[in-house]
Amino acid sequence: MPDETTAALQALIKQVETLTTRMDGLHGHNARLLDQIKDEKREAAITSQNSKGTAALANSRPPGVYLTREEARDPRKYAEAKAQAEAQDIPVFVLRDDDEPSDLHTSNRASPIQSKIITFDDDHERVRWLRADHNTGSGLVPRRMQAERDGYRVKTFSTLDDLPDHARTKFEMMERAANAES
Image 1 (cartoon, rainbow, N blue to C red):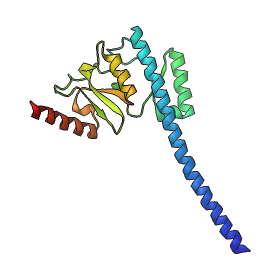
Image 2: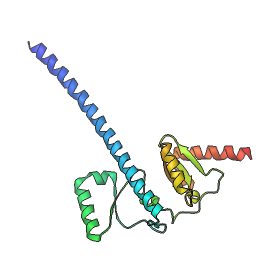
Image 3: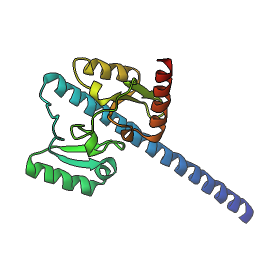
Image 4: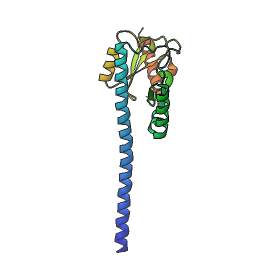
């Protein structure tokens, strides 16, 4: 009888471990989905503001309290940030994991790199990279909408330092190929 009980307990422990692992994976998956939904809502709000002409924020990042996603998930930190924002009558912004406050506006950046490559896709991160000097004008909204339809979000770059290593490598290969054709 003790052997059967021990075997049953070990099987139960194994099942609990499996369920715990699945729950951890589910929690991570749900966090990613929630982040994606919030990103889409944030981008839609920005696009809406830009189309109305009310977001002329080219010279500096907008006033607000900025939190990383990790900080925003901490109820205490979020409550402190919200209280500070309400006291100053400014909004709270939650940055995506790959955003930096300097990514919000590129006014203090160096002149964009001169190249034949204006845009390219990072299939791994689902980002459509666009040279900063082409992120203006009447084509801005259609470019972003097309990127969304294709499953990408648009990020700009001015120099190679703005690109992650794998994207920099792809850009350099595309630039060499474009120059070889000339």
